Length: 308
Ligand code: MG
Ligand code: MG
Ligand code: MG
Image (cartoon, rainbow, N blue to C red):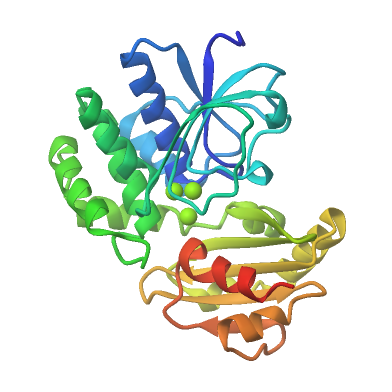
């Protein structure tokens, strides 16, 4: 890979927004005359796979490291713990994101973040600002990302901008938002082909604060009880990761996309933090978090507040 060509990627364990926004951003850069290419830092999940099948297009190339001096653009993340290996030796040209900022660069760059539900919502605005046409495929990609990140507008992270833009995109994409969105989210709840180790890594993110390392993993489901039938296997897989990565805390959340609740498993030396953070009592390492669906807005901030 030439280092003149900018590589664009989302976070590790990529979700639909990370994949779609990197492709949408690559198209924007190319339209603006900048050589850029979308790549990915992990496997495509079942929900994202649904979009690729629907559109009949190829998935971006998988990478894990970036070369020294490589030009990169980050989308849907900014924390180095969630990014490509060797990122500190790459040159970050741009960041387009919607997460809490944990980012420093000793040089100038384009940094765009907005408190909205999805990176693609920000990208839609950039397309409009640069007057770049939004094709049917690009619209479908952006719409899929917004539906995924906002859980079809039910997440507290969803803003009026996400909803208005999704409605505009659905017209270009020529889809009914509810039908397409329900099918998309449902595709992501299929765990049948995964081992417990894979399930906990479909969407896990590593965070660090004040010397503490913790992960919050999340999966979507329409049936929490059936997920928890495999609780002992998930616990074994989580304990392995805690040991391997020296984690102080591991929270695994199964989020019910129909009823908007999450049931968690909390393990690690600091597992008790979740009791104070979420106002719950752990029962056999688990607790039900009523009306909690968002890691970014609900799960993570409470843990950060309660870590010392
Ligand atoms: Mg994401
Ligand atoms: Mg996102
Ligand atoms: Mg997510």
